[in-house]
Image (cartoon, rainbow, N blue to C red):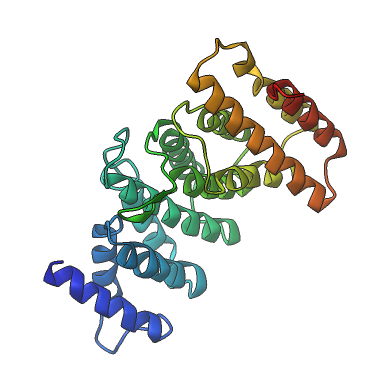
Length: 279
């Protein structure tokens, strides 16, 4: 580990211990620049426990940044060196830069929901970057032995859940998000095993609970999830069917716990039965 990283770890641990307060004479943006530089560090203690936690403390808890500063952080975090860094690569450490960048987007979107600061063009650009990232991400590993949590499908789902909650998210945006969810479930390479199904289901639960789409449109989308049933038998079919069944089951029980969507729950059961070769 180089001296800068070691010093950053010591400083961020001290800042956390001090309730995310800086010492006299320290400059907040000096740390922001370093945190953005090392946001995808392969060492989980730095990336996850310190850098992400500090962003959460400063953006979410203490709300230290004004609108212009949040825009500045956002413009960096969704650029080609962060959210889109080596996008499309698989099985390499670049995934950590992408998946921890998207977690900072979650924090910024939460601030926007509380007090909107993005204009429509800025929101549209962010929406396009987020959905584009979720569609194009190929490294869908959950927990990585060498490096800790990557969790692209889950972290991206967290951001999409906040995206659909924004007042700017009209019907067209909601439908784009549902299409991106189907693309993730239909990835054909990974069977999710680290609660990704529940994190993805949270997006649809939010859409249903806030009446962001009509039940008929959501039911129609469930029907689209049956498309893989017409595929020839293959390993990709098995993975897709398993991911989609698990997602539907997670969604069903989330709605059951919330006492919501009886009509939609019937539609979920119908779609799950179509996908389930044992029924």
